[in-house]
Amino acid sequence: MRPMDFFDRHPVFSHGQFVSAHTATGRSVNTSNTLLRKHVEAGRILRVRRGLYAAVPRGVDPGTAPVDPYLLATALTCDAVVAYHAALQFHGKAYSVSRRFHYLTCAQARPLSFRGSDFVPVRMPAVLRRLPDLGGGIREHPHAGGTVRVTTLERALVDVLDAPGKGAGWEEVWRSLELVEFFDLDAVLEYVGKLDSAVVAARVGFFLEQNREALMVEDTHLDSLRRLAPGEPRYFDPARRPGKLVSRWNLVVPEQILSRSWEEVL
Image 1 (tube, rainbow, N blue to C red):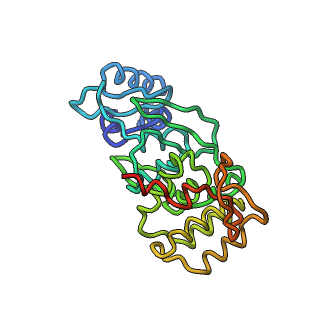
Image 2 (cartoon, helix red, strand yellow):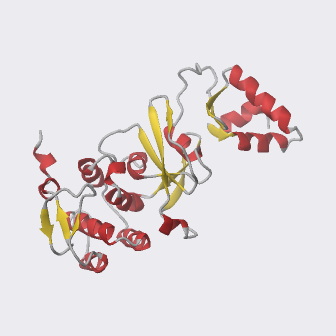
Image 3 (cartoon, helix red, strand yellow):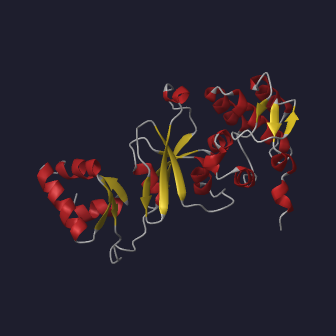
């Protein structure tokens, strides 16, 4: 495959991907490396960081060439999965647009800032790293000429309730999740069970109960989550903000969330 043909088919790619494709035609690794360097110098590809490149569309200035953030996040490690608020945004369900993209990975990785966007690795929870499917709820979607690995809306729901800071805070979490018209609640419950966290189960139960009618939540769903809830009161908010005890979930819920006070702001 000619280099330009490879670039057309791979908007974001690793050094290893290019070398593998190029040496398959009988070329040497040294030749592949030389070609990569020449194409960077010619402005046909961008070096995002060591070992990672983005193709520059024909006729576009490399200094302003767009690089799709979801493709980039997916390529940052071999197992990267776009997650949390970034997953909601990919699915078109984020209340506010963010240029901060969290991705899940089992690898040790460093944050990356590129052209005004921040890419933040999150280590896959240990309880999920032991599972062959990493907890499930991970899909691949064709996007912008490449493929994005991203969590489903069901997994994103649980993840942002587990880590609201990665969902841009409670107001953004609530407003974003309420943009979703339908969740596969059986898939939500299955993933909650894999996380094995009583607090997360209670937070998910509380959210579904607040949106019971809109999301067609049944008693069986809430009962399943209630059985997983804490046996003694726990704080809803990771920062341990005070609030009112909601006894059926054993959660101390901040008034802002109970009253959805952000809805009062015009």
